[in-house]
Image (tube, rainbow, N blue to C red; front, side, top):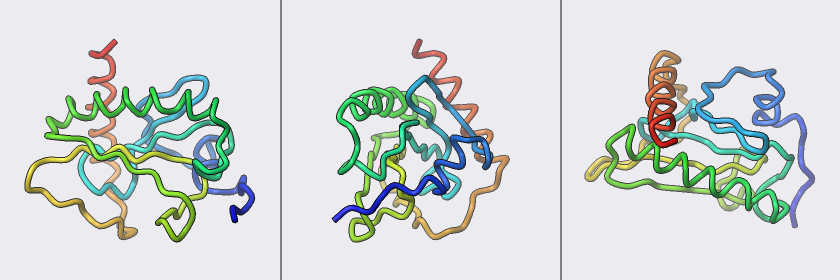
Length: 144
C-alpha cells in the first residue's frame, strides 16, 4: 500500500528553491539536475514538478510529459560523457530501493568495464557537479 506524498521531501524543497541544485534542464512540467551522489559522471535526476510519490501514484498525463524529457536527457548525457550506454532507473517504495519519495528517474551514463559507484551518501564535490552540469547543458543546446 502506498503512503501519502510528503511535500517536505528533498526534491520538493529543490523545486521550491529551498535547496540548491545543479540544474541542466527545466520546462513547465519537469526539472532535471545533477545527482549529488552520482554513481557515474553525468548522473542526472529527472523529476516532474507535480507532486507524485512515485510511478505507482503518478497521473499518466504527468508520466507522458516526463518520459520524453528522460529520453532527451539520456541522449544528451550519452553525447556529453561519450558513454557506451545509458542506464535509466526508477524505484517505487522502500522495498524497491526508493529513498526520496518524489517520482524521479535516474539517467546514468555507462562505460564498458566501469562499474557503477555505490549510492553511499558521499556527496560529490560541487565543482565537479557544476562542470558536469555545464557539459550536459552544452550537449542539450547542441541537440536543439
